[in-house]
Length: 179
Image (cartoon, rainbow, N blue to C red):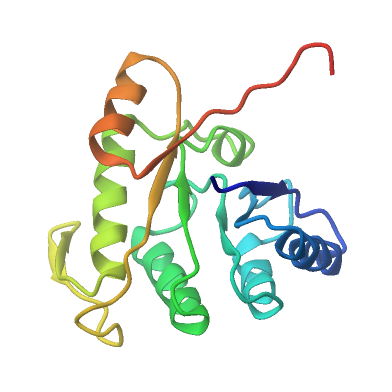
C-alpha cells in the first residue's frame, strides 16, 4: 500500500523540500501540495526542488484545476518535471474552488475537467490533440512521452461517475469534526 503526505506551500519553500525528503526517508511514496496561486506559493516551482531532493517520491498538486492555467501550460509543466525526474509526477485535478473563487471566478464544470484531463494526459504522452480548434503536439516531448496519472477530487454522483470512468485515482478530502 502506498502512503502520501500533503504539504502546504507556506513560506519558506525550503521547509516543504525538507519535509518531502523526510517523508521519502520514512517510506512515503507521494508528496502532494495545494495549488491556489493567491493563497500559497507556486507549487510547480517547488515541485522541481522536491523532485531534485528525492529519488523515488512522486509529487503533484492536490489539486490543480483547468481554469487557473492554460491546459497546454499544465501539460508542459508536467512533461518538464517528468523529463527532469524520470516520470515522477502525478496530477490531482479539481474544480478550482479556492483558486478560482478567490479571484472572483466560478469553479470549473465536470465536463471541463473531463476534457482538460484528456488533453493534458495526451499532450504529456507525446500525442497530438485538438485544443480550442487547433491540432497541436508539444514537439520536444518524444513520441513515447510519459504516462501522467490523473486523480480527481470530488463528491456527489456525477463527480464519482466521472472519477470511475476517467480517473486513475480518487481524492476525497475529509476531516474528523473532533480535530
